[in-house]
Image 1 (spheres, rainbow, N blue to C red):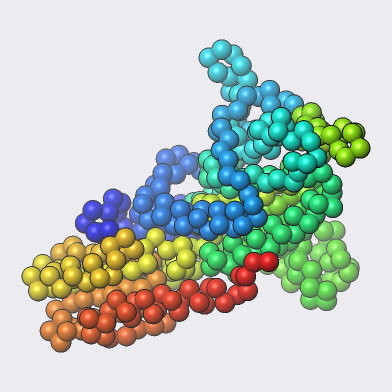
Image 2: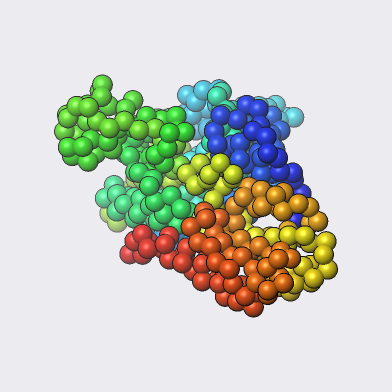
Length: 429
């Protein structure tokens, strides 16, 4: 990709109304543009980040034998009346009527749609268990949209639904999915995410775990017990004591919810008439699990956890481009010719090439905002000696190498970065 063709503008100024670093840096870097409160359009750099996050999620869901499906965004209100949530959910569920007067909703979650999809299939115990998931746009009429993509009204989400004939089978799959989530967060560059027992809220069920990124930018308060090691949400505990051992004075932190998984039991299947015939011929309602991750929120959380004052420092696994090639004084013929050759060697598909005839300061500032893991800088002075600069976005690695060795050096740096992420126990069962 050539910078001269990249749609979007980058600015030095801190945008008004941005209270989180991730929001400000994404606005400054030309990642997104506000349409109205809690609703954003995304430019190419952010769509590439989100696509890579989705690919990681798909790999982990497919490894659990998940089957990708796609539900509608607009759903008949009748489905939500079947489950009882049409009335019980508050104003965050957007209700409307179509031209024929029928009640409709915009899906903020898809338990009802999942049951509707498979209740005619799951009529015999021999077809269980099974797991379906989707990556889909949702709408939640959030009253307190804030923080860019951290809290929005329209969002893209992965939500999955597993169906089982016993609570024990659900619990076994639930544990596997929990470990898959831990791998997802480690692979996108957030190994510090904690799985915390949580309240199921309007989703229902007895057991749920919220995955929380510990960061001062978060709006959730979580506690960690120094005695037994338990993590817990303060609002879910009595006072400030550990709910497991009763120890007082836990360590209090702030956090952002980046994922949530639930054991739903038969709340939805029973209400919506989903039944199967068991081995003895009896009719029973299957039990369900639900597994969600917000794509945009996760991207913003990665930015929140990995940035400096100049811009995002994208982990190699989700960076919009792996390499940023800066041709300083690109208007000079020799620089342009050498940079064009190097662009091909580095790989056009993974490289953002700044061939604009602008000042070096502008090029390097834009490179910081776009956050590619490795930067190659080629200018007249180094070119005269047949050299270029290869450095990592986090400034931890920097080498001056012959231009002929630039691609090899970049590949080595990228491989080192991948090993650092993959070294955190990401192996599957």
